[in-house]
Image 1: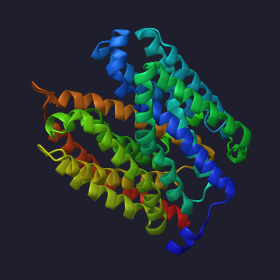
Image 2: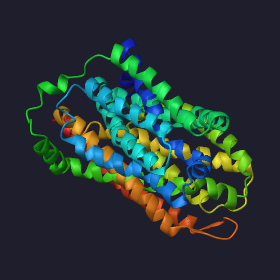
Image 3: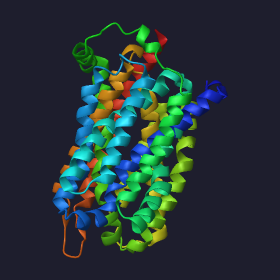
Image 4: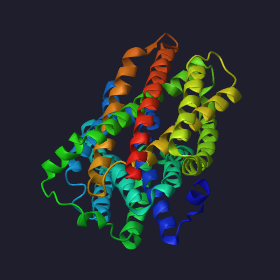
Length: 410
């Protein structure tokens, strides 16, 4: 079976679809991730307090979560290409408004608009890839698309910070608008209509379609798993830079190098994990990633003063664990929904991912305590919580995998 799975090669058009979806995801992720490093210049420029800046960051996630639920009822009623272009256009306009924001309230509204449109795009991308690629190829497809996360860290954030140092914090958003417009033109020109699901979709009432999606028993476990998978990472992410500097004793000037090396490794790791998922099975790769994540998180969150080389090594292994859970879980989840409700399923999943991530970040802020000098207390507690969520998701993914196998035999 392994050889047959990997023997399936991509056509030229499929390669184009994977590339354009990865590039699109790059712009979405970069727009979200660029906010935190720009905070140091945005706050004094717009006279924003730390609490207000925190709201600017979190409003994106909550707006994205709400829009995911709102769009779920309509997600399967239109050609996916048209839906993608609609929301991507809204995302680009929202990002343009961020670039033009003259004050805090304008920026807050702009981030809300960007999140409303950008938060749905990920679910449309995964619905498209699921429509166009058979199950035996989805691990590789998800692996390539997820490299967008690493690429945004390696290429996007350093470039964005460099541009902001020269032309101000508005410039990185204009850069994203320019790249996004270029990607949008390619999608409009070369992506074929994706409307096969319309022949299967009989429910024209958006509310009924959403209700059916969120009440389908075999979907509920997948939704719960998706929400829980997002929780741990969002707990550690907001405090990782402060923990590295103040707890590990690494000079702040070396952070870009750490991000660069870790990101470069992640770019190569994603496709390899995708191939392994197709070759050996998603559940096996997921369990490997879960166990590696548990070990490395326990080590990482309990580190003291650490040489930069060891810190990079630990971070890289943690990324391998994260990707080894993320990619096969997405590939397995894609086999759960019926084609007629695939868009709705993905939209609800994306919404839960955003909302659970936002809640996790808030909870983490209540747990972690900053001492004088910046040292973080109780960071290890976040690690223990993450380990607990990983163990629970291992059991959940086992049940999901068995359910998929049974459905495939029918």
